[in-house]
Image (cartoon, rainbow, N blue to C red; front, side, top):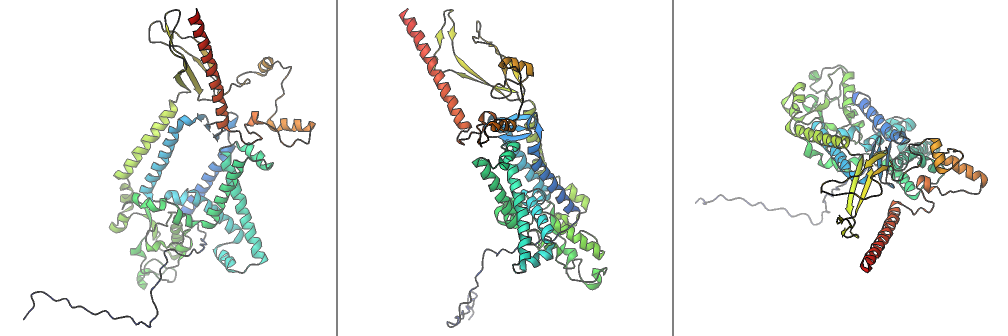
Length: 529
């Protein structure tokens, strides 16, 4: 008799030997850090990296020293809430331009990632740039890759201590220079340099010099690839912007496998092997220590060092270049020619990013080009009620605030129009706005004009350091001077722009109180009459 349904046999599970020890395997989710000693490499992409390192560092270290109209060309003056960018002056109310700049950076990153992967990471990211600089210093002091590995494995000795001290000393000096330059973007760098030499830095300047210097020293000197692997969020979401037509560094497995060593000049087909000689140099030159032959990995920063190394090996073996190259997933699978690869880069996603980028850039440039040099705020004085004048007109009081957004004086004429018989009652309908918050007596005037205005027989011009030296000559015991009227730095270290604004508000409140008192007296006199 056959059963109506198939019977699935049940196999008994053998019981583990109770006497046997626990053989469960423990898997760690975190790999132990092993120091990577990247091998030096030369080639087309290495030259591009060197060029980008030089370009970014010339811009970063050079801009604070540029002068423009007797001031620092690039200065973000947080104390006075003014931001100078060559001939442009921005105020906090111009935050929209900062937003536009951030949007341009984000869209540019998305565009380049969609086209060619992590180009920013491999060529211009500060972590990559400073790691390259620190590796260059390390190579010059300790030697090539083999010498560095041998030195790290050797026991501590006087020679090793001297070499390591020289390397770390150079790293620290470079890191402090980097932190010093950062502070120079927010405080005039000449002032920072003088205070740094005299060890008279303010607490915040001191903090940021050492904090940014320590961050540079730690990230570029010790953490290196770990920042890219574990700390950088860009490595995690970059895959969202990738597609099958994105240019990425790829290993041609079809051509390269099977791997194996052979003599120079031997045709791989004759020995049943691929073009890859399994030398491992592509792994040795990688700053993150990955093997590109295992496929694209999130740790890859797109520096193309493996391409240069592989091309050099191919040249020595008399094989065609391109075993490791920039290509796309579709090109590898469908064997597209190079011309087809470039045609497929202009796909909808790329076009969309490009159009939005151009639109935002155009809007920002247009806004800056047509930016008005003067901004005006009109506020009705709430403490003063509307009243009828002797002429039978209704009088309202308004406060008008002008802000000069340029570095040139602005001449304005105030008028009102609209209603019939409307007129403006003010002390003067023509005003001149100084290029700074406070009118400078010397601005736009010759030496004789200044002398006559202040009632002096003559004028002697000195910079702040010369003035301090002249006063100290009379009393050498004086070590510190109150120069806040010149540089805005108070010896008490507790006066900032917020406190000055508070004092201005108190003065304004006092003025309003006096105005209200006068109005009350006028009203009282009217009632008595």
